[in-house]
Image 1 (tube, helix red, strand yellow):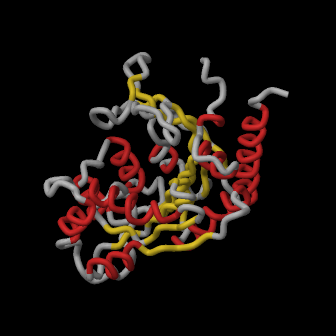
Image 2 (cartoon, rainbow, N blue to C red):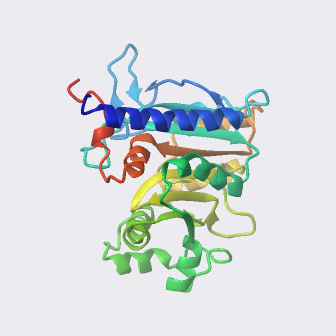
Length: 297
């Protein structure tokens, strides 16, 4: 038997399980362009060298969302993505993502769906939840449900030894990685209630709050496996938040235009799953390399 047959069969089992549940849940599988028209800014996409110029997608995202409609309220795609970054045990230049979008799916239902998708492949874990907003209140005395970010930026930076001039988006990401994700070894933890100002400006502001987003990440044994959020329905709020962190781009604009035209419902929710990372976690590994087949090509 080939030494690769174990990882190949494991990955096939994961993909079959995901597709089976999504079919039962009424999702339609789509294929959207891997080679995109926009580079989204310096360093975000690798050039593909195709006619008229194209760039390899780093995520599936808006190109999938614009297919949500009354006739197709639930869609998903499983396919390759590319990032022009140095590889390591948890990152690769080419990797596989599952992205999905659903109309009128609430935040709690989205979290439930995420676990029903990955939970069967993680039988030794029981899901836990940790509210970042609650953590911020406990550690810094700032109630993000009623107060703005305020002095959180500088205080988080001091806590982790960041430069005072580092953008809040980067400080927040590093703080969460060091202070929260690092504590999930041997656990499966849904991080919820993210502050505004991070790297997911698409996420909807939680009802009745000042600075809390309907966004989650599932961290398993210190590794991010799933991220998800409900989409912001207030275009002005989304645009302002996205531009503030330098993440408003051509593809986000196309999705917003489709919503404004009535072609796509504003009330959608989406999530993404790293397939090779899920396979690695299922096998008890902290290395996605065995699940990247045919590396000699």
